[in-house]
Length: 421
Image 1 (cartoon, rainbow, N blue to C red):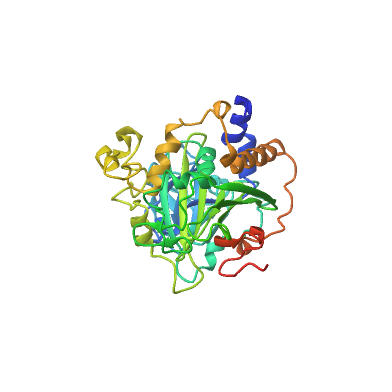
Image 2: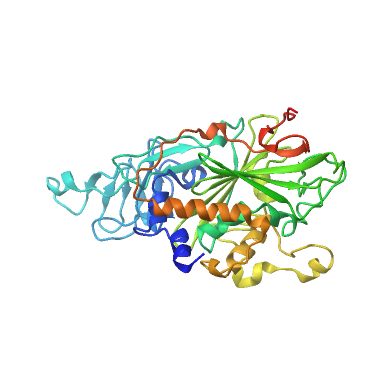
C-alpha cells in the first residue's frame, strides 16, 4: 500500500471518504447499560471525530446529542438530566432527546429564541445491548437491522475496551485467524480430547496444533468470509479442522464460535487515532451462552478491575508495557500478558497510532488482510456513489468451527450440522 492509500483506509474524521462510508451505517455509541437509569448520569461518547453526549430521559428514551451546548459551547456531559431533558449547567438551557429547547432559563419567557433554538440530535435505536446512532444524512437514515445477537435467548455478554490506535489495524487483527495460534496459544491451547473449540472458565481448547492455516476467501454481499483450514490432531488424512470468519463491512467481524457461545466483534472508529473494541458472546439456545460478569472475567476486561469503568481505557497499557511478566514467560506463558484482548492491544498499539502499511511484508496467511484492504479501499473510492441495496439480513449470518471431511466443501458447512458429501 502507498501512504496515500493508507490514509484513505484509516482516516475517518471530517469529510474523509472512509468516514463517509461509515456514515452509511448505524454505529454503536455505547452499551445500553451505560445509560440504563432514567435521569441518570449523562455519558460522553465519540464517533468519527464527533463528540457526543448520551442520556436516558425521565420517560426512558435515549438521546444522542452534540456534546457542546449550542449557546456558549459548554459541555452538556456535566448537565442536569431531569424532567425529560438535559440542562446545561452554564445558563440553564435545556434540550430534549430530539434536540428541541424546552427551557432557556437565562432568556425572557416569551423569547422567540426558544421557538427556534435546537441542538443537533442524532436518530437513535436500541437493540442487542447497544445504543445505535445514525451520523449520516438525518433526513434519510438507512433501515435499522438489529444485530444477529439480538436474537439471543439470554442477554448478550458484552466486553468493551479502548484501543489507542486506528480502527483498521484493530479490524485487521480481528480477521487474522493465524495469529491466534501463536499470540493466544496460552489461552487457546491444543487439546487431544476435544473435537472442536471447547470453552472452559479460563481457556478455549482446540483440536489442532497447526500454527500455519491454509486460507480460502470468498466475497459476499456483506463483505467476505474465509476459512482457516488446519491439520487436526486426529485423522488428519481424512478431515480438516475448519474455522470460518465473516467480515461484515465496514466495522464488524463474526469470528468462529466455541461450544458454548457465538462471537462477534465491532471495531468502531472514535477518530483517526482511537477505536472502541466491543466483543459480544451470545447464543440462541437458553442453555448456552455466558454471563456478562463471567465473559468480562474470562477476557480480563472487568470494569473497575482491568479497565476504567467510564472511559474503558486499560489499566495494563502501553505506558506500563501491559505489565508483561517475563518470569511467567519463562514458566511457560507465551506472552506474559494477561487477557486475550490486552495481548491483542499490545500488538496493535505497538504499530503506532496509524500503522505504516507501505512497509508491510505480507505472507500467505494474510489473504484476509489483503481482501479487507482491497474491499475497503474500493468502498472509500466510491464514497460519493449511492450505496448498493442491502440484500442480506444480519439474522442470516453464521460462522462454522469444526471438522470437515477432505471430500467436502467447507462452504457447505453449517453449525451443528454434518456436511453433505
